Image 1 (cartoon, helix red, strand yellow):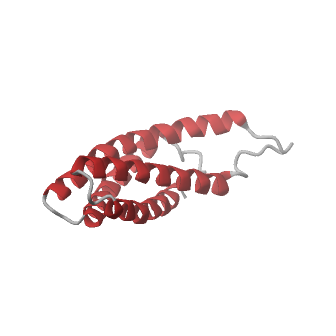
Image 2 (tube, rainbow, N blue to C red):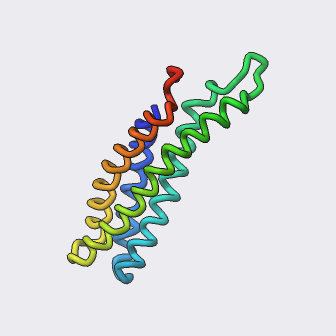
Length: 141
């Protein structure tokens, strides 16, 4: 479920980031890259949080109807740790790749798409390794 939500969030942010990169193509390369990455994160995390909430809202309910805050906190720490490591790698790789592609005179939208696709692949590898190392889904959830 987490990979599905991550892929959907990445797809939405890919499209919007490419549009933003194209709109800002007259900006200096480092500004275009920085603004595009900022929009990418805002869109990505908004979509991911929304999807995670809808997929898991019943997982943390007790029989009394109250939220199991301990289980929720425990899983959120694992998710943040797993995603955090991947996002640091993603941010560094994406920023440098987009900047590099812009310096090679790629169209801004193409530089955004190419850098994001490459970064997504690397990020997913890191996230999956992190999730396995933290045992996020060890309990079968």
